[in-house]
Picture: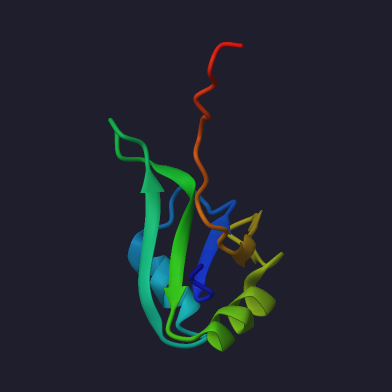
Length: 93
Protein backbone atom coordinates (compact mmCIF):
# COMPACT_ATOMS: atom_id res chain seq x y z
CA UNK A 1 0.00 0.00 0.00
CA UNK A 2 1.28 3.44 -0.91
CA UNK A 3 1.01 5.50 2.27
CA UNK A 4 1.70 8.70 0.35
CA UNK A 5 -1.31 8.41 -1.99
CA UNK A 6 -4.40 10.46 -1.20
CA UNK A 7 -7.95 10.10 -2.46
CA UNK A 8 -9.54 13.53 -2.87
CA UNK A 9 -13.32 13.47 -3.19
CA UNK A 10 -16.13 16.00 -3.63
CA UNK A 11 -13.97 18.22 -5.83
CA UNK A 12 -15.60 21.06 -7.76
CA UNK A 13 -16.24 19.96 -11.36
CA UNK A 14 -14.50 23.11 -12.60
CA UNK A 15 -11.13 22.22 -11.04
CA UNK A 16 -8.17 21.44 -13.30
CA UNK A 17 -5.22 19.11 -12.56
CA UNK A 18 -2.88 22.09 -12.17
CA UNK A 19 -5.24 23.62 -9.59
CA UNK A 20 -5.28 20.37 -7.64
CA UNK A 21 -1.49 20.14 -7.63
CA UNK A 22 -1.06 23.80 -6.62
CA UNK A 23 -3.50 23.40 -3.73
CA UNK A 24 -1.60 20.45 -2.23
CA UNK A 25 1.82 22.13 -2.60
CA UNK A 26 1.00 23.90 0.68
CA UNK A 27 1.29 20.54 2.46
CA UNK A 28 4.57 19.45 0.85
CA UNK A 29 6.06 18.07 -2.36
CA UNK A 30 3.46 16.76 -4.81
CA UNK A 31 4.72 13.82 -6.88
CA UNK A 32 1.57 13.59 -9.02
CA UNK A 33 -1.99 14.89 -9.16
CA UNK A 34 -4.62 13.13 -11.29
CA UNK A 35 -8.27 13.97 -11.81
CA UNK A 36 -10.63 11.21 -12.85
CA UNK A 37 -12.59 12.16 -15.97
CA UNK A 38 -15.53 10.71 -17.85
CA UNK A 39 -14.51 8.45 -20.71
CA UNK A 40 -16.35 10.18 -23.55
CA UNK A 41 -16.69 13.87 -22.74
CA UNK A 42 -13.59 14.18 -20.49
CA UNK A 43 -15.44 16.16 -17.80
CA UNK A 44 -14.27 15.84 -14.23
CA UNK A 45 -15.92 13.09 -12.17
CA UNK A 46 -15.41 15.09 -8.95
CA UNK A 47 -12.57 13.08 -7.47
CA UNK A 48 -8.90 12.42 -7.98
CA UNK A 49 -5.66 11.19 -6.49
CA UNK A 50 -2.67 13.13 -5.20
CA UNK A 51 0.64 11.46 -4.39
CA UNK A 52 2.81 13.26 -1.87
CA UNK A 53 6.58 12.73 -1.49
CA UNK A 54 6.42 11.25 2.03
CA UNK A 55 3.77 9.64 4.27
CA UNK A 56 4.22 12.51 6.74
CA UNK A 57 3.33 15.08 4.06
CA UNK A 58 0.32 12.97 3.09
CA UNK A 59 -0.94 12.99 6.69
CA UNK A 60 -0.36 16.75 6.86
CA UNK A 61 -2.42 17.19 3.68
CA UNK A 62 -5.27 15.13 5.16
CA UNK A 63 -5.25 17.32 8.27
CA UNK A 64 -5.13 20.53 6.20
CA UNK A 65 -7.74 19.72 3.56
CA UNK A 66 -10.21 17.12 4.83
CA UNK A 67 -13.48 18.98 5.38
CA UNK A 68 -12.12 22.25 3.95
CA UNK A 69 -14.48 24.14 1.68
CA UNK A 70 -13.22 24.84 -1.85
CA UNK A 71 -15.55 26.61 -4.30
CA UNK A 72 -18.56 25.86 -2.09
CA UNK A 73 -17.79 22.11 -1.76
CA UNK A 74 -16.36 20.38 1.32
CA UNK A 75 -13.43 18.21 0.31
CA UNK A 76 -13.07 14.63 1.49
CA UNK A 77 -9.33 13.88 1.70
CA UNK A 78 -8.18 10.47 2.94
CA UNK A 79 -5.33 8.04 2.49
CA UNK A 80 -6.15 5.95 -0.58
CA UNK A 81 -7.05 2.32 0.02
CA UNK A 82 -5.71 -0.44 -2.21
CA UNK A 83 -7.88 -1.44 -5.15
CA UNK A 84 -9.95 -4.57 -4.81
CA UNK A 85 -11.58 -6.74 -7.42
CA UNK A 86 -14.76 -5.07 -8.62
CA UNK A 87 -16.42 -8.44 -8.96
CA UNK A 88 -15.80 -11.95 -7.78
CA UNK A 89 -16.32 -14.83 -10.17
CA UNK A 90 -18.48 -17.36 -8.43
CA UNK A 91 -18.75 -20.96 -9.34
CA UNK A 92 -22.15 -22.64 -9.53
CA UNK A 93 -22.92 -24.77 -6.50
